[in-house]
Image (cartoon, rainbow, N blue to C red; front, side, top):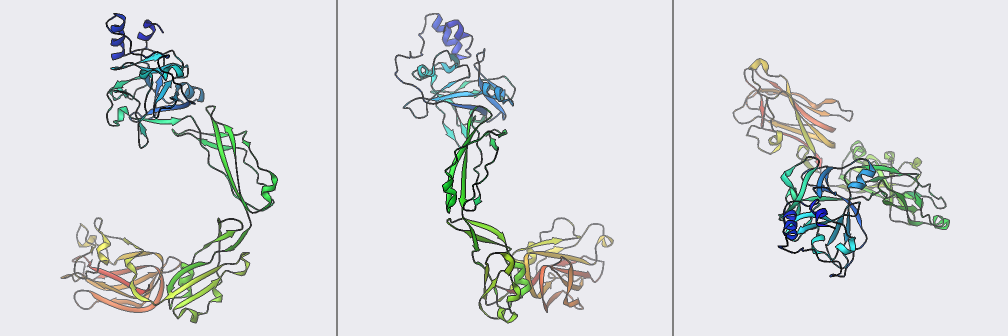
Length: 488
């Protein structure tokens, strides 16, 4: 390469260094190919995306600026033209030669920095310290470093054609950090369960995805199919196929099929309490089971229905295990083992319940309504606009994550409050409707509200207290609400 050709491809400190060489004041710092015996390994083709200017890639081009920032192309041929070819230097960890599609090699113009392109083969460049780069990594980012210089997006520019030069390496700052994208597609593995003796039909196409976003449907897949004999017996059959990707890359597709027969279900288990209702168990029982597959440790998920008619009510009254079979027409055997433990009265609002309130001012946090403090205010339906803007009756509701049995409820006003004149406890039935519990509407004839009442057991998917005021001269407030029922 002549000095005049180099000068046309150099910037910054590199141009100054060349001027000094031309004047005979210093000598060139590039090491001749014969001075160091080395070579390079198989190349990789990558896009080097800026961590600062998302969607822009560093392009090596024979121009006044050897490296510039360009928007990542969408057409495959243009992407290939933007790609940087990375050659690993033989026998050296983290040392690479970088070149463009035309074979121009990126190098430092001098040890002080600046960039130029060399018209040499990668093997020759591997012996030149100024033409070999390291790629230190942190998380998903890299830096492109040669000695005391690193590729740097000057001026934090996000424009097409922005200059990429060199600067002293920092600590993975955004303008010196890059993300490598291989021009290599990835495809999901395929596979399924097949019955012994059945050869699976292979897909005609697969989707290849590339790390910076694009994807493509690839056809003409060459499958390396195994011999027919492997499909005759239980076991796992693994093989692969390949197709050409968007950028001439070879996309490998892994295939893994399990040959076997689907058998009975693995026994399911659940825990409840002695005295539970069949209706409650039905709602909480699993709706799917795992079925075994012969010759493997995989399972297949299947819908299930349980034969609750096989359970006598008296079977649920005692501590111990009961087994509920699957219905006869499932086509496979299934069993649900329910362990019944001694019941403990539990406030069902303390776990698996979420609140919903209406007609309040602002975002009242209802968490304090179940913190055990019967004295401090936790809910108020005060609204600006005076008494005529308040709502009567009002309510606070809870929705359960699963059906719960309830037998008792309690509700309290805070200290010095006195405006709740009646309370009606309601439960949400299995169809989503609200019904009064057997205690009905409870009138508060005294002062501060403090009600604790039992009622006939209900199976509820939610619970609420409907409150009515004594007078519209003031607002209603609550300190605590409880809904008790048997639990574990």
